[in-house]
Length: 203
Image 1 (tube, rainbow, N blue to C red):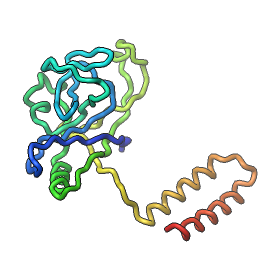
Image 2: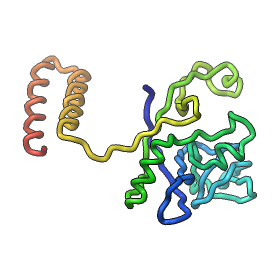
Image 3: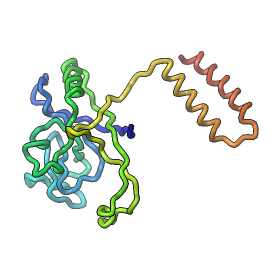
Image 4: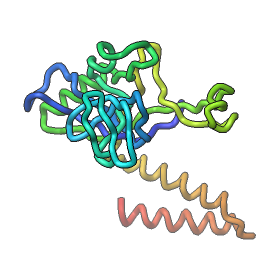
């Protein structure tokens, strides 16, 4: 399994209640390059140029950089199928299972605004090296399946008591492993006692 990163989820609905959700956009703070699709002020554009302060859209609209976000995945068929020149130009899609869940929650008044998206590590190839990217450098790329779908998770906002305890014990162990005190065992015991006292008082 790769690593997950937090991203904003933008919805541009045409009505207060949505059924077939073709208006979901997952955005990133990555630099917007020529050829990228982006959202600004609830409108969608494709970057055809840029300056120090503006991103130029394919409809000759000048959009402020700070107000524009790169689209990394969407349910919008206009930019995943109909307005692309090749498979490599297609924006990844959002799995239907998540779309169904989002629509259900949205129509209940619970709008999901942030999600976790999975990435994989990729090493720079010789070809990319020729484009002034360090050869052998490992960077994160969006992970997609054979359907060009991303792997997405909703951000967890609540945790059980057992999950908090488990996380705390992992942090305690990490702290013990990193410290260089000559009496690590003694510190570990006192640390656990303090942690157990904190659990009794707070959970």
